[in-house]
Amino acid sequence: MQMIIVFVFKLIFVFIVIVIGSSRTHGELTSLVDGTPLEVTKDILDGLVFIDQRLSTVYPLIRNFKNTISSDPLNITGSWVGSDICNYKGFYCDNPPDNKTAITLASIDFNGFQLTAPSLDGFLDQLPDLALFHANSNFFSGTISPNIAKLPYLYELDISNNLFSGPFPNSILGMNTLSFLDIRFNLFSGSIPPQLFTKDLDILFLNNNNFIQKLAEIVGNSHIFYLTLANNKFYGPIPRSIAKYFSGLSEVLLLNNMLSGCLPYEVGFLTETVVFDAGNNLLTGPIPFSLGCLKKAEVVNFAGNLLYGGVPEVVCAMANLANLSLSDNYFMQVGPICRGLIKKGVLDVRKNCIRGLPGQRSMVECMEFFEKPRYCSYRQTYRYLPCWLPDFGGSPMDQSEPAPAPF
Ligand SMILES: *[C@@H]1O[C@H](CO)[C@@H](O)[C@H](O)[C@H]1NC(C)=O
Image 1 (cartoon, rainbow, N blue to C red):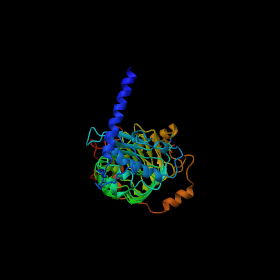
Image 2: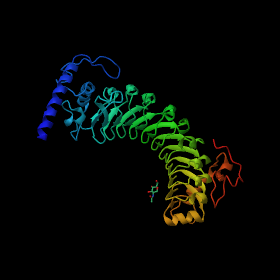
Image 3: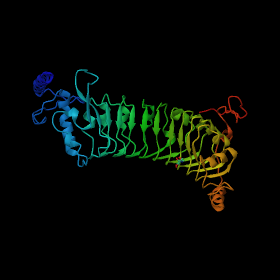
Image 4: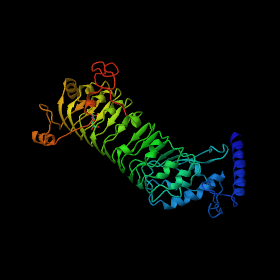
């Protein structure tokens, strides 16, 4: 009995849908993005009827996009047929914010679909109600259309691990709703507009592209929660203002770039940092004592740089340290606390210039390095501790060194 009632209701529903659908397929559709009229004929909609006009608007876009897909090893697009767009693989419907009774395409998740297409233009940038677009690990290429700035609800954009190229998509700067941007593992090049860092982003993944830029140019008052810059070609020194825009970050990932110059003592203000990774750059000079103020630091990596001097004991004494990688530099001394860490396997100082330890550089190699004059400005700041540590003193209790202005 119950089944019959349900069946009857379904019949009525389908009937209503057909009536509404067919009454809407006559010429009143406009593009929701730019308001231009769409010529809606049975031809464009393949004679299908949709539960909502918004879905009939996106249908031809999906069909056209499907036609540009040249490889689909998982046969994802096999499910992209008929009028039930909300059940296509990767497509998700919801009520749009401007009309709680309408049904629209609200999010797309193509993660890992391995689709190949030459561009997302005319597709992604024409889906006006889209809130999420996740398409990592596909083979999409081309550039990002300026029209995505017109999508009023998009707040998560993940196009990581694709083949996008060209300059940073500046249209992203015009998106005011965006809070999550992941473009890592692509082929973007050129520089990143500094305005990006003044936007209201929470998450920004830029790593593994070909961005070439002075790190110091990326300044702003951002409160980005998660930012990755690794594996690009950022160069120049780590700016003294580092704490101003990295201070909220739990992971500072600068590895595999071309950063040079001496470490500013202001790294000691990165109080939220759990992972500080600046491995494989061209950083030089000593490690500032202030690094010991990173109370939450668990992983610190400076391996593969040109750092020298003694490894500060106050850094080895950091309470939560689980991995301190300083191999492949030119350090000359380690004190008893650091030696304790070497024994425990926490500190790696292989390939340095520390006499009496195994696995060090040859005398000749070390002498060649130190033959050249090496100099860091603000020398007095290297021993300055901008925090109070019971065994080492430091401010605010002990201001034996003059405190330089933080920024
Ligand atoms: C410590 O960190 C370095 C650099 O990130 C990494 O190569 C190494 O495997 C880590 N060691 C341990 C024991 O986790």
